[in-house]
Length: 159
Image (cartoon, rainbow, N blue to C red; front, side, top):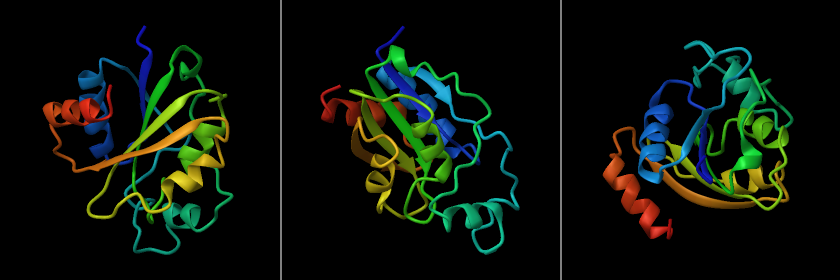
């Protein structure tokens, strides 16, 4: 098994495409972070202040339940953690994921997908959920980033 893992949450499939390409480029294992209750299109409507995603993102203590906690974290040294940017931070299910495992001594490199915003305060908000990990801000990618471009990014990281 690889010492690298690409773990990701994808609500619409965009982050999943990037994660799959990243796993190939990094020769890494792949793990999908799934919510116990899948998100619907209505849940993801950021223009509706009562949508599920809006309510979760406006409540810093929100921790959506995970479908499972079987990610092979202990077997990996480097974890690429991917998610879509929601309200300039990671979706709160990423906090749930980080709090479900022991990341002591692990390096977590964030990557995200976004239609135009950057990481915002993602690193700060996630570090509190995995205080013993070395969380590094990676890069925000577009939906159509190629495996070759991801390989170049990995090279720039020395990986």
